[in-house]
Length: 215
Ligand SMILES: Cc1cc2nc3c(=O)[nH]c(=O)nc-3n(C[C@H](O)[C@H](O)[C@H](O)COP(=O)(O)OP(=O)(O)OC[C@H]3O[C@@H](n4cnc5c(N)ncnc54)[C@H](O)[C@@H]3O)c2cc1C
Image (cartoon, rainbow, N blue to C red):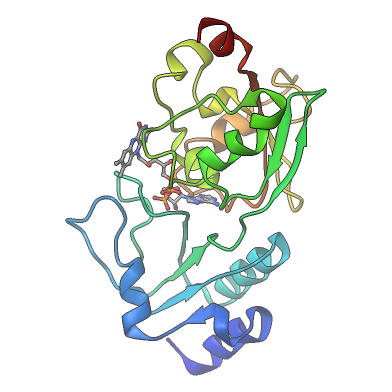
């Protein structure tokens, strides 16, 4: 990749958050679909929504394709890099911003793992219901892109039924799951990262009371 373009990325993200070393880049060469591997020329590690937007803006300015990446556990190859593109990893966006017991919702950054959400809600007897078996490591950003789920989803629904809104740059959805107008949130969830990078997610939390009663 052109040195002047790399300088643009380092100017907005700092040198340590722009990976160019072949040994570091190999980490990102595939996701859970390990039969396909492409070592990307560049990986960027933004730490905020503003930095994600700035990195994507550099890509847009130069017509460079980019792929968002969470934990890289996806099985359809959605996080597979493009040979001349950039991987935008959200691994540093790992903050649980708020757990709201009254409205039963949590506001989290996309790099927070699925399990971490339930752990954060555990002290107030709530949990995040969608439970892919990769929940210890997969991120909520990846869950949104894949509309992931597990056994709880048979009763409580998939990711698409548990994300209330996202982002500070563009906000899709609102404070309640049912809204008038086009269901843009529904279109975004499950879009495999093709419609944008998730920078913040508001999820619905369920009560653990039933488990505790039957335990
Ligand atoms: C052992 C194992 C068990 C699994 N079990 C299940 C299961 O039970 N149920 C299930 O549904 N899945 C399961 N999966 C698949 C996978 O864990 C999920 O699809 C998970 O949601 C992927 O999350 P990730 O953070 O690893 O995303 P990644 O693999 O990094 O990315 C997946 C897709 O999401 C996009 N993406 C990632 N982050 C963002 C973002 N912030 N904004 C926009 N797009 C983004 C990527 O571009 C890519 O298209 C399993 C995988 C493994 C390896």
